[in-house]
Length: 223
Image (tube, rainbow, N blue to C red; front, side, top):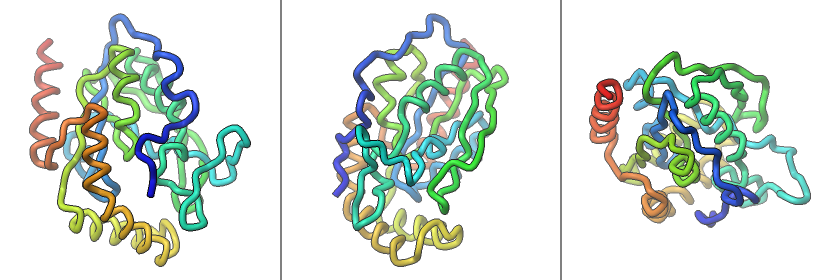
C-alpha cells in the first residue's frame, strides 16, 4: 500500500520563495485518478498546469532517490515517483507572470518526450491538477500563491470504472496491470481522500467544485 506521507527527499526542507505581489494565484485540484479532474478543468476554461507531466522517467533510479516500487513495477501512485520541486518552480514562474517551460510526459512510455511552454496570459487564477496536487498545498501557501485547494470526492466504484475505461482506451499500461492497480486504488481511495483533506484540500463533488472555482474566479477578477 502506498504511504500517503511519503514525499520526495527535500520536498519540505526549504520554504518556497514568497512572491510579494503574485499576478496569478493557484487552485490546486487533486483527486483519485479517474475522478474527473481533467474533465473539470476543460469545463472551467482557465489556464491549466497538468502536474502529471512532472513524473520522473522510468529509468530515473538515482541511488539517493530510488523510484518506489509495488507489484514488481514502479509505483506511479507514490509521490516519490514525481518531481515536486520542478512542479513548484513552474508554478512560481507562472504566478509571477513569466513564461514557464513544462515537460511533455508520455504515460504509456513512462518518460518525458519533450517540452512545451505555458503562459497564463493575465488570468487571475491558474489550475494545477494531478493526483499529487495536495503535496504542494503548504508550499503554495508559504509562497503566497495559493487561492484554494480542492479534492474531488466521488464514489470509489465510479472512479474505478471511469479510470479503467480511460486507461484501457489509451493503452496506458498492460491490461492486467491496470486492473490490479485499479482494484488496489479503489480499496485505498477513502483513506487517500481523507489524507488529502488533512493536507488542506476542500472535499467537493465535481459539480460543487465547479461552482466553487467559478466563484473564486469571479472574486479574483473583481479584486
